[in-house]
Length: 404
Image 1: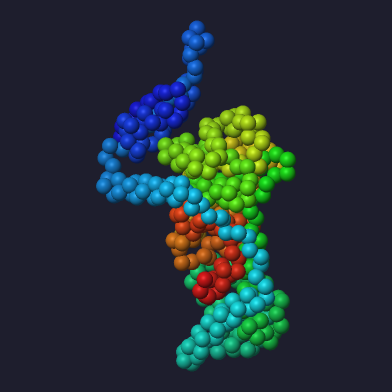
Image 2: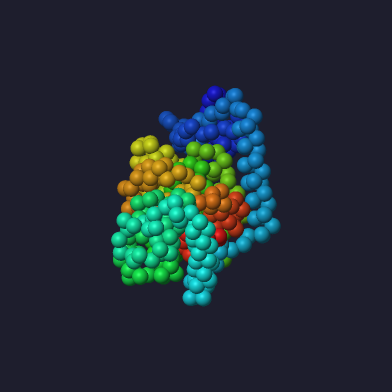
């Protein structure tokens, strides 16, 4: 590994020096402000020193992956520059009864077809596969319906304890002779209620709302911020500013600056909680300030403490927290991640990379585990199109085995 220090008048200039000598793969190890000492401090300005490192044995696969990332960023920049900036999915009114009934009809047809197929195997199983379930009648089709619903939800990686909780709550609202359609309707509605209404970004009344995005590395925080900034400024006509504390990666600051320049919004770089406090007055004329934080390891307590100190620089009533998670992360890892953020008791959830998974069970799992409200989902790399408010009905249908 090659490690070198670079000093310049500004952070950007120091980063340019690092990239010119070490290449774009360089990773920033440390950034500090250098103040002149002695009598010279009266005549010289402060400078910025960064310590950067690069692996001198970068593999071909790593180089190829980096080239793909750079190509993707360039494509996004070109799309934005051509003003192909479309709105975040506009808020749609909740579908009326006819739309919901159609979804349920589709699901019921699917369930009934599966039940017909299962008749051939009936002789090899108990007549009531869920005979230990209490609260329903002896209607065999009802038992089969519940069994298939459980099977589909488990296949979508919904945790068994949450499946059982939903079924138990539904049983309390149904009579013992409940029909298949009433059981299916009740479970479908119960899942939608569990998912809840999305809580989106709202403008503060008389002062800016600071919106922090936190979460593990690689989940797409910076890209999500760019998408939301586009929608908030171009579609909703809000006065938006960007802040980043992700100074650990050279590309992260440059990426956000590129989006900011295209959108015509300011971006500030902060290195500490004190820096954020110091620029609050400068940002007081903006409606919304989106704050990108560095990806943190949920196993590193020092990093978690640094993040808390940064967030606490803004009064609780003036901030909103979003925990960004990937829908492709396995449930056991998600549990460790959300536990690491348990000291923040007021965050909302964003799930990214829905286009990279065929199962949505973890969205329901983490919602029921944390009781944190859901908000946005992302489903692609394109900025700013591939983001929207969470669609509870779409997810509920998918969890029950219907197509979406």
